[in-house]
View 1 (cartoon, helix red, strand yellow):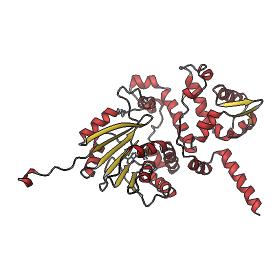
View 2 (tube, helix red, strand yellow):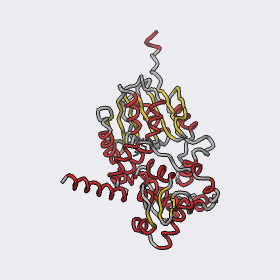
View 3 (spheres, helix red, strand yellow):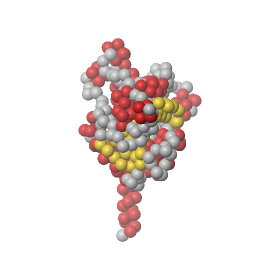
View 4 (cartoon, rainbow, N blue to C red):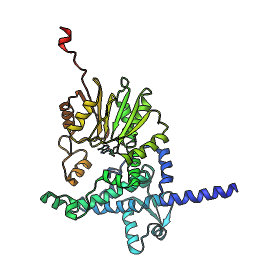
Length: 381
Ligand SMILES: C[S@@+](CC[C@H](N)C(=O)[O-])C[C@H]1O[C@@H](n2cnc3c(N)ncnc32)[C@H](O)[C@@H]1O
């Protein structure tokens, strides 16, 4: 009886492994918790780079996106399979299958030994072990959308229209998408949980909260940043504020991490109201927009309170990080704030002692303090 149950469990686990279902990957991701490193071109062998021309590189990149959409690398993980077997799993046949696999071999993402294909070490590391299933699913979908957008770049540049209106498609609004589709909110929030783990660790190492007692994590998503902070500062409490579908997911993640006594949640809209009662208000990758949200944060804080911003703010000439510049090009409204502009915005909102420092790759930590209320002269005289 016991043997049969073990065998059944193995069959289920194998099926999940082959089909990339979230159930299996969620537990695996928890064990690894390494965050995510992108496979940038510098990690490819030189002989592969030498085959890539900058103008046509998008076709190769599109093959990689398709491989991710079809979960080729996950399905091949730890296995050697024939083209026909891979084809059956991903629903591709004939010469297109052979050509698709050859393209992945050519860029060093698959290895062909005899008639069998397997992942290379690069693929196993970057596309399977360090990548959550949520990232595979959502990021590759996002890339597909980007291909659509960039296919009409000249029209966008010359007509100032959005790619959505040029292509006659619905424009993408991830907040609307999350409100419409709880599964999407679940995947998105989990994706960012994994992606931001290293950022959260760096934040906890770099932000001194020994003299503060409570953090409001605005647009806090999964609460990953709050988790790192309350783990470092044992006296600290936090509250994650986000939209309703995200808060449902965050609650589960906080429970799973056994932090319900330290981290609370609140449904809210940061563009309308920032609640008071916290001596730190934090925005991590929260798209806080303009000065008005910062002013609300200022008003909500007590004297001596701290505002904390964490984001990949751009360099003054916008060239770094490159992905933000590309997102700006794709966008229909201007939102690209440089690090220095954010510092200025904080000062304009009333904050003093504004400091900034890079804490991880292109990620900046900017802090500002609300001054202590001055005693009235009248009361002294
Ligand atoms: C890019 S995610 C970052 C999440 C989290 N801070 C992190 O670092 O992982 C941005 C978050 O802001 C939330 N958000 C966007 N607009 C919001 C609004 N008006 N009010 C509350 N939350 C908002 C989104 O739902 C999302 O969870």
